[in-house]
Amino acid sequence: MNDIEGNALGTQEVLLTALARFAQTHPTLPGGYISTSSFTPTEAHVLLDTASDLEAWREALHVATTEVTLGALDQRTRLEFVTRLGRSTVVIYAVFSLATEGAAV
Image (cartoon, rainbow, N blue to C red; front, side, top):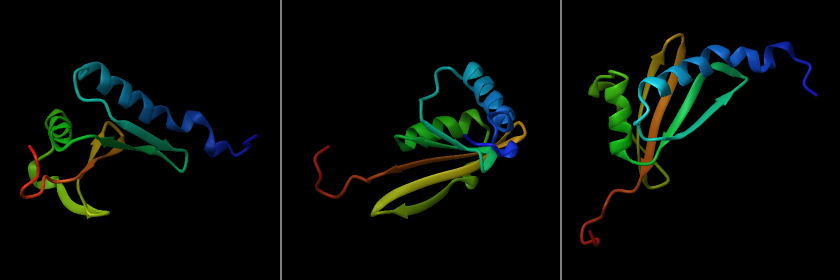
């Protein structure tokens, strides 16, 4: 059993409430894999399936395109942005393979 007071579920209440409200106001956004941690109770990471899913979240959160970063992860492309959702921080990202030249469409 975890006896550390700072590790209690209640420390994530602000974050979970913000995510729930966001889901209520944007119910048609693509779903994602959302992870949280008791070590960073006001931060969530949202892994989306595609670049277009990330774009939909970016628009819903009113994040400028210049805030999206492009990187690589295991020979795949990674798009990411970080924003505030109420008093919480949300890291939104998608990792995907780009179509290669000559690949079937």
